[in-house]
Amino acid sequence: MKLPKTNMSRIGLKLITIPSGVEVTQNGQNVTVKGPKGSLSLSLPVAVTLVRDGEELRLSVAHPEIKKEKALWGTFRALLQNMVIGVTVGFTRALEINGIGYRANLVGKKIVLEVGFSHEVNFPLPDGVTAVIDKNVVTLSSIDKQLVGETAASIRRIRPPEPYKGTGIKYTDEIVRRKAGKAGKAGAA
Image (cartoon, rainbow, N blue to C red; front, side):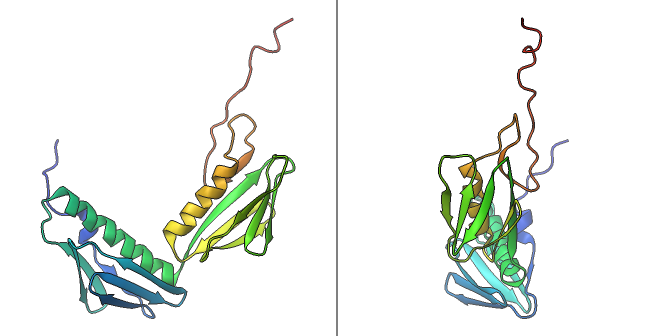
């Protein structure tokens, strides 16, 4: 059964509730969200309009039947929601380092990784991201969801997990599919 085509964005239609302690200000197309953890700002495209109804935010577009505007509607609603969550709760991403001799240390504003190379890898943390290292788990936290995700991906890219022994850097909730290796090695003589 084919669902009827709609001109509304399901994500864009949802309201964003503003919790207590969060201040949302709009100056033209620029939106600033301030909360207990910090401040974030976003520039809305011309097609998207923001309306405040008391303690709720509503986004809309002039022409929801145009595919590009419909996509912008849902995307910027999600970005604003992430900004509100970020300034109140914040975002974290955890990475696990697996391997014999693999370790990470925090030196100032950079992470020093020893992950099987002939040299240490120095990874400077961007402004706005903090790291906590507990044994073999590196936990990154920030108020900006995109920044913490991109930082975690950059650290993982240094030594991605390999499928045979499972060594490398992976997300804690990531499942690495393991491969068997060479099965015919034992029978050869």
